[in-house]
Length: 190
Image (cartoon, rainbow, N blue to C red; front, side, top):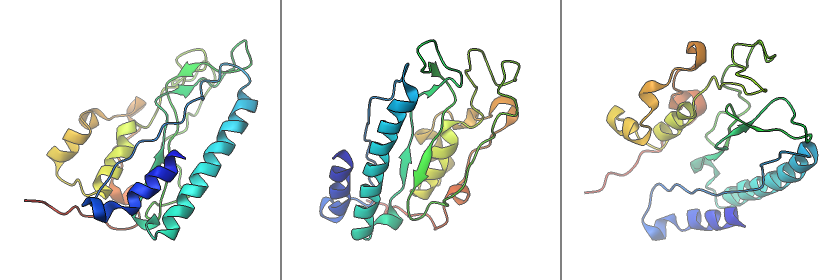
């Protein structure tokens, strides 16, 4: 239902006089400290159905090429179970992007070479340090949306100058890393 409202807002962009919009939609209920497999199956099925419907609505509107959808979480889960058969809060997580301009079928970042307790990225109890910063993905999205001046990118992503992954893994992604079509240039007003 929330994504349906977003698709209707996208459809009215000309009437609203906008050439760029950012929409944030929340979906709670992911904090599975127990029964992870069962709960994730339910949540992923609902998420999949909502995203499929949203993508179809964008294609009907002929806006799919102009929209990028990023699915992310503010935290991740441990890779080891807790005593309740679930997982606990952790740090490294995953993002998913789709849209007509996104280079699909790619996996970015560096998978840990050792996820055992002795691994250099495992900080204990199955908590894995991330190798790719949140800012890496958003740097690319900002560029695709037409933010191309360094000072503007720094304003959008204040931590981007500090992005160096654990053991020096990650550089910022550029527009060309994650997108296949050219930047959607913003109209400059006044």
